[in-house]
Amino acid sequence: MDFKKIIVVITVISAAIMELIDTSIVNVGLNEMSGNLGVNIEDVAWVITSYAIANVIIIPMTGFFQRYFGRKNYFMASIAVFTVASFFCGNANDLWTLVAFRFLQGIGGGALLSVSQGILFDTFPINQRPMASAMFGVGIVLGPTFGPTLGGIIVDNYHWSWMFLINIPIGIIALLLTNAFVEKKPEELNIERSKIKIDSIGIGLLIGWVAPLQFVLERGATDDWFESHTITAFTFMAVICFGLFIWRELATRNPVVDLRVLKNRNLAIGTFLIVVIGFGLFGSVFMYPLFAQRITGYTATLTGMLLIPGAGFTLFIFPMVGKLLSKGVSSRFLVFLGYVGFFIFSMMMTNLNANAYAWLFVSALMVRGVALALTNIPLINSSVSTLSPQQMPMGIAITNMFRQLGGALGIAVLNTYINNRTAQHHTDLVSNIVAGQAVTDERVSAITNGLIGRGINPWEAPKLALANLEAIVSKQSLMLAYLDSFQMVALFFVLSLPVILMLESRKASKASMKAAAEAH
Image 1 (cartoon, helix red, strand yellow):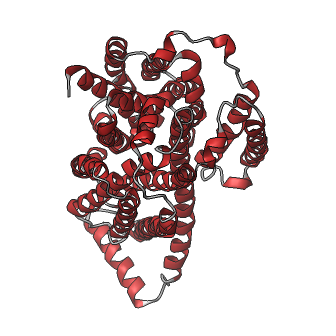
Image 2 (spheres, rainbow, N blue to C red):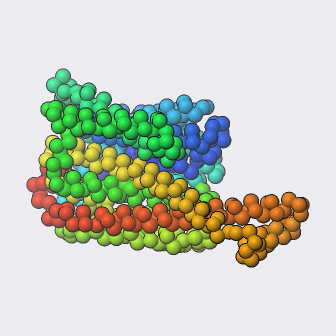
Image 3 (tube, rainbow, N blue to C red):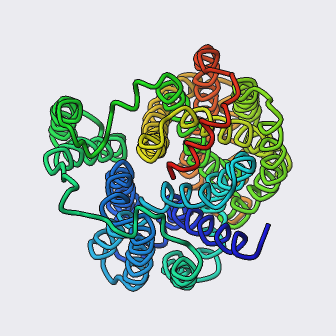
C-alpha cells in the first residue's frame, strides 16, 4: 500500500470513527453535565436526542448532496461543520445552547459515515475491495465501542467539555489531509447544478417523519409514551409524513431518497438485517455500561476499559473476514455465524449478577466483537454489491440510516422493557417480604444490628434498616430486568436467522464489483 493510500485510509476512517464516537461518548457524562449546567437528567438527555435526530435526517440525503456539491467539497464542509460545532458544544454555558450546537454537530457528522465509505472504496482496486470493507468495518465497530471508554476517562479525570473539544484537532487534521490527498472524481470537476433538480417537498417530508420518529424513540420511555400528548402528536405526524414521503419519492423523477433501490432483493433483505445489527450493537452499548455501573458498581473508566479487549479482538478478526470473502466464502454463512455469536453473547450476559468478575464481562464482550466482525463486512457487501453505479450512493445512505434507526429502536424498546420488568420484579419480590415471617424478621434484625454497630441511633436504626432493605430489593429488581433484556436481544437475533437464508450467497462478478467501485 503506497503512502497516499495510507493517508487517505487514516483520514476517512478517523472521520468515520470521530462521528460514531460522538453518538455514545456523552452517555457516561450525563450526570456531570446535568450538575454543571443546573438541569435534571431528563432535560440533559436532549444532548443525545438532538444529535441523533440531526444524524438520521442528514444520512439519507448524503447521496443527493454529493451529486449537488461534489463528494470532496461536501465531505470537507461536513468535517468543518462538525469541528466548529464541537468547539461551541465544549464552550456552551447553558443546556439549550449545547443542544443547538449538538444538533449542528449531528448535521455535519451525518455525512462523514457514508462519504468516508465511498472515498475509501474508491481508493482501492477491485481485488482489494473486501479488505477495504474490513478496514471501514473497524471504524463502524470501534466508534460506538470506544465512545463510552473515552467518555469515562474524560469524565473521571477532566471536565465533560473535553468530550467535544477533543474533536477539534482531529477535525482540523482530517480537513487538511482531505484537501491535500483526496482527489475529486471526474464528474465533480464540472457540476452543472442548474440541471440538478432539488426535491424540496421530499426533503421536507423526510424531515417531517424522521425527526418526530427519532424524538419518539429517544424520549418515549422518559415521557411515558402515549400518556404524553407530545409523544402522541409526534407519532401521528411521523406516520402521516412517512406515508406522504413514500408516495412522493415513488412518484417524482428526481427523489431526494430513491426508494426504488429497495426493489433490489439483497439491499432490502440486507437493510432489515442491518436494522437488527443496529439494535444489537447500540442496544448492547446502551445496556452494558448501565449494568456495570448500576449493578456491579464499576467506575465509568473501568466500565469503558473492559470494552477494549473485545474491540482488539474485533480488529484481529476483521482482516480475516475480508480475506475469507476474497476467497469466495459465502457471506450468508459468515452472517449466520455472526448472528449466532450475538445470541451467545446475549445469553452470557444473562448469567451475570451483582458480584460478577470483570473477566466475565470481558469474555462476553469478546464474543460480541467476533459477532460484529462476522456480520458487518458481509452485510455491507451483500447489501450494495448488486446495485448499479447510479444506485450505489443511495444504497449506502439507506443502509447507514437504517443502522442508526435500528439503534434508536433498540434503545427505546430496551429502555421501556427494562422499566416495565423492573416494576414487575419489584412487585414480585416485595410480595415475598412479609412482616412476621422468620426470614424477613431475621434479615431486618441483621441490618438493624449492623447499623447500630456503626453508631446509628437505636431508635432510627429500624427505619433505616427498612430503607436499606428497599434499596436491596430495588437493585435486585433492576438487575433481573437487565437480564431479561439481554434475553430479549438474544431472541431478536434468533428470530432473524431465517431471513439470512434469503440472502443471495453467490459471489459477485468482477463486472458488478467494478460497478460498485465506480459508484462511490
